[in-house]
Image 1 (cartoon, rainbow, N blue to C red):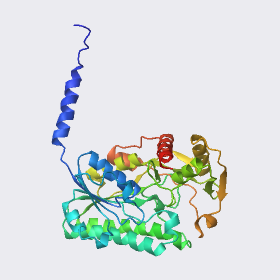
Image 2: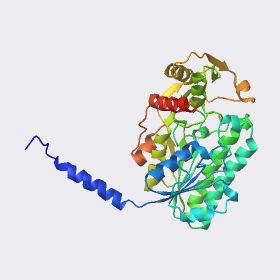
Image 3: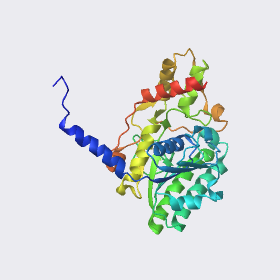
Length: 347
């Protein structure tokens, strides 16, 4: 037979299955608020690559159009508008099969300076989406992005943990309270208006194209290391965090909306790979082959305001796996290497 390797009996099956999947996949209509933000822009890219039609909204208070994929893509529309002032949003909600509400003011450098805007914009934008879904009788599946910031730093935080409101530090609490209120508002609309809504509590996210000015620690440390500047670690560096690759977060969000059982559920999304901030800074310094020193900066000096640190933030992911079958796949080392490679080209 001339040494020709015979085909495996399953080869034809997998070929036909792949062909059938492409033929039967229904292209979806996707709306992403906060579409120019870090996670939002990756959601846009993910769905465009699947062949879906995408409409993204962002005021660009924190996000930038430059983070988005090809703005000229035939299946993509971008609206640089505040949600409650957007004339196109109503039609987009009526049109949508999936809505990712990612729009939010975040990053403690911003939050501490803008507590009123943090509360009003985070709450108002969430209510706007829910109201429009109710008014248009939308059958879309919605996700309202919440945050690990609602927790008080319990080890391996579970979704059924009692949420406590510590006294004082009112500037710092503005973001946390806005997310708690959004969760309550979402549940009210789920119950009264029969909306489909899942509520992910997203822990720290990292990866290529994340920017440093808004308080995101990995791009800040990488930029400092590449520039041979002191790596600034806030506090004593003993606080522990997990960092989930943005691609894993996007996949988890997508699968969450594919799950019929996710309606009305609060679900942690993040990584279980825990690391202290001083260990993170040391690792980044090594990967960047940097001679930078590590500098410890008091919170008051870093933020300009009093700040109380959560010393440990780690998600329990049992519920996510039960609903979606998904577990994060990309290790932190790969996340750091990808981030460094991209930032080397940008600097």
